[in-house]
Length: 417
Image 1 (tube, rainbow, N blue to C red):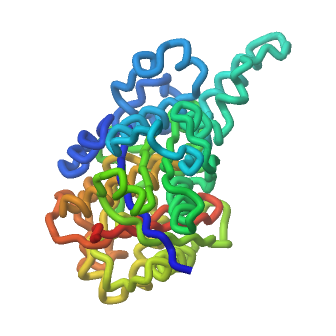
Image 2: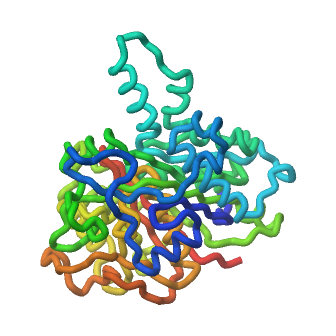
């Protein structure tokens, strides 16, 4: 069977360092940190008092106060980034077969704030079950693609992928597969997350997963640095329009890049810790390369999962060394989580956008906040520390790994007709 080709025709982003694709990219290449003290709740009694929050997002202004109240922030974010992507792709759905356009969306947790607010209100009451009628439809993780499809009248496949921090990489891979198999012409794909609240920060604190560098939030996310002490929570959304090539050409769409492969695997090791030898990470990178009919020698840049945790970063580097061999010294590696923080279920989409823009612009975003070399890492590896680097880029790979041992890796290539 001959697969159909799949291209990227639209992008949208709402991130801690920019509320549009242009602002996000500008923040990335200039090494801007999105971390600051949390403003959305009182952190006095919390071990971690900072995060990478979205800034200046006006849900009421975007949606109207009445509609905004019916939606959890993770859905608000999804609709916002998708509106930008739809406009960017020049889509007029009235002229397209909407039965062949779907929405596959990623979220690791879904409506955590809604759940927290409703349960807290119940706990403070007299035991009467006075729940908001929107409680369940605001909370469920699949509601984001539901609202996107309703807004645009899209009747193709519609669901949410839930695989923790690999969720939106999985959404991209599922969308890619439906299109190349001829099951659909186009997908709105990506992910969103909104966990910066008492339950999200408190829960990750209880796991000892978050940085506690409260005296210097802006430098707290420091992947591959000797003094990294945990990840920094982030929030936001990223939307990518994936489209069958001939369909895109027929409507005169601009093309950012071609998606050429995706791999998925499981560590089958531990509930939260990665495999100590990076076996799942190595397997998923090889699977993506095989799917794309590529070799490690073809890759120019790897946007790594790179969360800034003491055990996670070495395992990923070990996996890359295993897969790439001496080619590791030729490629650039960087972790854009050093700037955005970790967007959990939205991370894959937001980082895929960074990878696509790196490909388009010939610029590698940096890994900021590097101060002290970690002797665990080969000093000859180019982690793109602190400053963006220009180079010719033809193919990029982007990794996402999640609690439960979920791994997903995607590959994009410069488009050639």
